[in-house]
Amino acid sequence: MKQPISDLTAAYRYLYPRPTVLVSSGTIKEPNALTIAWSCPLSVDPPLIGISIAKKRFSHELINRYKDYVINIPNITQVEGSHYVGSVSGRMEPQKLKQAGFTVEASNKVNAPRIKECLINLECELQRIIVTGDHDLFIGEVVDVVIDLSITDEWAIDLKKFQPIYWRKSKSMEETYSLNLRIK
Ligand SMILES: Cc1cc2nc3c(=O)[nH]c(=O)nc-3n(C[C@H](O)[C@H](O)[C@H](O)COP(=O)(O)O)c2cc1C
Image (cartoon, protein in one colour):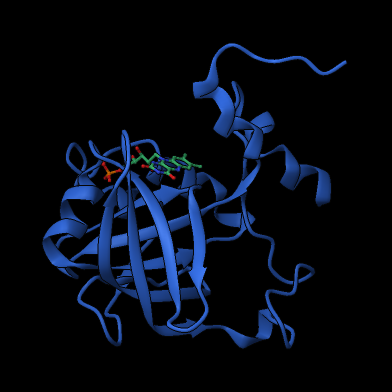
């Protein structure tokens, strides 16, 4: 039986599970990243992708300062490192990428570095920030794409070769990433 729920701030949870990406920012000498489940393609031409970042994140400050970032797509074998990147702020732990088992490399078109271990990197220039609520929508134009073509078919990621991380916030890690466990 369907029924209304009273807490409307919980509405977003019914859009879960969501694919998870790592957004790197800053510079090659002082890199940072956060884990993002709230991302959305916004336009094909120009190629625009939106990511929603809470105002209090260090990444919010860094992308505002440097005006670019890279969307790096991790796969399920990188779930623990990706979870760590999404649990600790670079403000408190400047070495968090290293501690999560990731290294950075120079990007082709933007100052923000790419995450080397991720097989897909979308380099983005910040176009604008739309102020929303406790999160803000960062709209980036993709200016370069670097990808390991062995994990794609003619359309997209080949799920037999590369399994993205699907996130559904929950009490245990197992439940949080349960969709991945089910499609394994
Ligand atoms: C799977 C996952 C998804 C997340 N999605 C988002 C998101 O879409 N937007 C956001 O602001 N924070 C999100 N977070 C939280 C940030 O990644 C986390 O607060 C991070 O430590 C911020 O790092 P920073 O302060 O160095 O930028 C997510 C965390 C996890 C584990």
